[in-house]
Length: 237
View 1: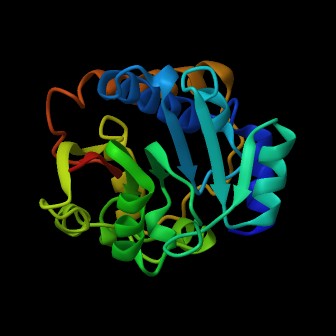
View 2 (view 1 turned 30 degrees about the vertical axis):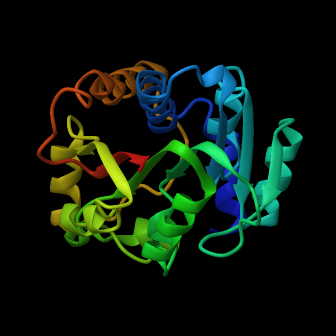
């Protein structure tokens, strides 16, 4: 992404409802599916400015943040993270981890299938990969162009990235479901997305955060039938 986007995200991600809710969902799922996280290493690939990695530093024994953009790595280093420059599918070196995060990363990469295969090699035995991607090609908008996306995903295309002989699927679902209907309406009417990360007024920001974050209680139990994004948690065979 462009450097100014990284700066805007860095200025707002500790307050903006979407980042806060996604962080809550990721923490909840990792605590549910990863045993003894304090003894595990997590690798956040495409870490951006490092908010997620920093939030996991007190949960996991070791956290490694990696991004292909030097400006993002520099911001992550300023937060005291173990941050390195790295990229998928062939620029991650010899790093190994028990958990790999690909949070809204695969849509930026031309070789998404090769990138998933690389993550399989990066993982230790019985390791976990948690990935999120934007859903529905028909929702393509200026937002995707601004963030240098290569694609949005159909559920079938996302699942095809994780072959059953290499991965055990623990969870795969749409998410960001409860807030999806108004977003569908805006995009289908041809309106441009608000591309700002500036939080709305505090009460509304908290309401949106709580609605989105509530889905963490649903995801381990049911598969949400639609949503603005897709989330998958896979275990290395």
